[in-house]
Image (cartoon, rainbow, N blue to C red):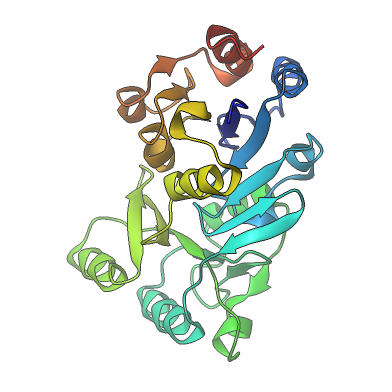
Amino acid sequence: MNRKLLFFDIDGTLLSENGIPDSTKQALAEARQKGCMLFVNTGRTWVSIPAKIRELDFDGYVCGCGTNIYYKGSRIFSSGISNERCKEVAKRIRQMDIPVFYEADDAIYFDYQSAASDPWICHAREAFETEGKDLDELLNSENLVYDKILMVLKPSREGERLKEFLSEDFECIDRQNDMWEVTQKNCSKATGIRFLCEYLGASAADCYVFGDSENDRSMLEAVPNSVVMGNGEESVKQCCSYVTADLEDDGIWKAMKHFHLV
């Protein structure tokens, strides 16, 4: 396959608090004109992808750190945790009374019995532009599930025991400042890329990835052509092939220019 596959993280890569830079939109349009295929590869689940991103007409989406993959409007891959295990985990976390929310492909669940008024939870609802659903709806169901978890967990012996409890099915990614992204153990942004490569008959050499944070590490290490934004975390700048300018300093455009994609 000669077509290039381009994979973009959302937050901190395509999107800042000020929106999507015009230079990024122009770069995506030019790359599409050159025959590149464009994909979002995000920790966000499908329901929380902003309309301003969907309007850019991507060919597909790797959502929830690889748990659900969409191509040309159809879901072509899905990985899940059982309802029983989801409830077991949520009940254990509820006992700790920590700020947390649970991300499903079609809903965000907030635990309104536990730390629901925490400023971080309020910020999350604003960022996702939703009040979300009550976790009790899932706990009282026999079929509802979630794909991943985001929680604030301060260093403690109890916190270490929780991470060990989660490790059977999940991987805990340190997002700094005591925030942990809890993703399905056998799914990642990298597995999403590998699945699409096999599905489309492409290779890692055909792929270019763009990210900014620790949850992008797997995809940055999965392909030879990887970009970290200038505003990105220092830890992942060590594992990419090119560090570009900040998002709002035309970082996407400059990186795509460097790789002759525009």
